Length: 593
Image 1: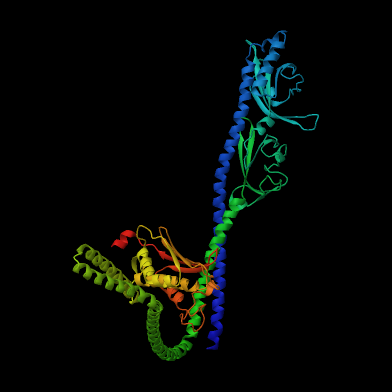
Image 2 (image 1 turned 30 degrees about the vertical axis):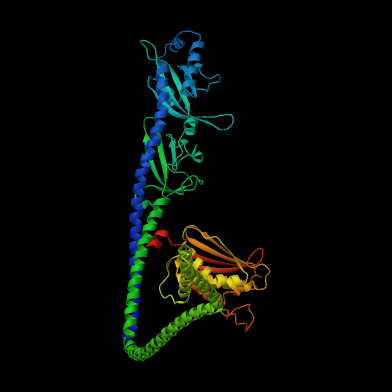
C-alpha cells in the first residue's frame, strides 16, 4: 500500500509533464504553419504593391522615350546635322518641349558627340561611350540610368533616352538625348508604408521612396551590407535590416526585373505583423491547451479529494442530521411563540383603535359639554318666541284678524325649522362616524360648524369673518370628522383670545386642481411652541381650569392625516395664530356620484 501511494504522485507528475510537452510541440507547429501562411499572404500583397510601383515608374519614363522618338523626326532638328542652319528655332523648340514635358535636359548631338543644340544654357557633357548613345549611333533606341556628378557634391540621378536621327538614304547621322530627373518622380510618389527601390545593372539604387536607400550599393545577393538573411526555412527571402526607423527591421523581400526600363524593382514588406499573428495563434492554442490541462488537473484533484473525504462526509452527514433535528425543534418552538406574539399584537392594535375612537368621541362630547350653555340658549330663545307667537295667534283668531294670525304661524314655522337644523347639526356632530371617507362639501361642513359654535362665539364676543363660496368645494374626507376638526379649531381660537382686546376669527379657502386649503386665523397671542402644538396633552391653558386635557389638536391632527391631508400651525406676520388644513380635492362629478 505505501508503494502505491508513492507511485501515484509520480505518475501524475509524468502525465502533467507529458501534457506540457505536447502543448509546447503543438504550439510550435501552429506557430510554424501560421507564420508561413501569413508570409505567403504578405507575399501576395507585396507582389501587387510592387507591380503598381513598377508600372508607375515605367509609365513615367516611357513618356520621355516617346518624346525622344518624336523629336528625332522633327523637321527643325534634322537640318542642323548636315546643313549649317541657325539653331535659334531648334533651341526654342527644345525649350518649349522641355518646359511642357518636365524633361531635365534635351540635347541634339552629332556622331562626334558635339552638342549642336540644347534646351539648357549649360548642358551636361554627353558620354559617347555610354550605352544609350552608342545604341542610338547604331540606329537603335538607347536607354539607361545615369548618375551625373555635381559641384555641390549631390549627384543628379537621371534616366536617359537616346533616339537616332536618320538622313534620307543613309544611316544614323546623330541622336536626340532626353534626360529626366528621377527626383521629380520621387517627389510625386504617393505615401506608402512599404519601402520600394529600383537598382540598375550595377546594383546601385537609383530611385526609392526611402531617402536612406538612395545611391546605396547592393551586394551580389541583392541585399545591403547591413542586412542579414534569416528564416530561410520558409522558402522566402527574409532580411534583418538595420536601416533606421523608416525601414522594417524584419522584411520580406520581393524582386521584379523591368526589361522595358532595364531596372530591377525591390519591395521590403514588414514581416513583423506576420510573426505577431503567428505568435498570437500559437499563444491561443497554448492557452487553450493549458486550460484543458488545468481542467484535467482540477478534475483529478477533485475526484481524489472527494474520494478521501467520502468517509468523513458520512460522519458529517450524521452530525448534520442531528443538528437539523435540534434546529427543527427550536424553530417549531419559536414559530409557536411568534404566533402567540402576533395574536397579542393584533389584540393590542384592536384595543388601541378602540381607545382612539373612544378618545375622539370623548373629545366631541367634551366640546358639546363646553357649548351646552350656548346651545341651551339657542334652543330656549326660539321656544320662548314660539310660545309668544302661538298665544298671539290665538288672540288674533278670537279678534278675527286671520291675516295677523297667519303671519305668527309662519314665524313659528321658521323658528321650528331653525331649531330642527340646530338639533340636526348637534346629532351629526355627536354621532360616531364609522364609514370610510368619501366626497364631502367643505363649505357645508364649515357652515354647520359655525352654527354649532355661533352662540359660544357670541357670548365670548368673537366676530367671525367668513365669505362662503357660491359653489360647493369638494374634498376627500368624512363629514362628521371634518366638522369636528373645524369646531376644534374655532373653539381653540376663541379660547386663545380670552384676554385679547380684539377678538376675531377669519376663515378662508384656497382651492387648486389637486388640493383645498382652509386657513383659520385669530387675533390672539399666537403659539409659543408651534412644533409641539399637535402633541397629545400639550396645552397652554391653566391646569384645573376645566378647559380640556390638550387632546383637541392632537385628535384633529390624526383625523386630517387619516384623510390623506396635512394640518400645520404657525404664527401670523401681524400676530395671532394661523392653522392651515390641506385636503385632497375630489372631482365634482365624483362627488355627485
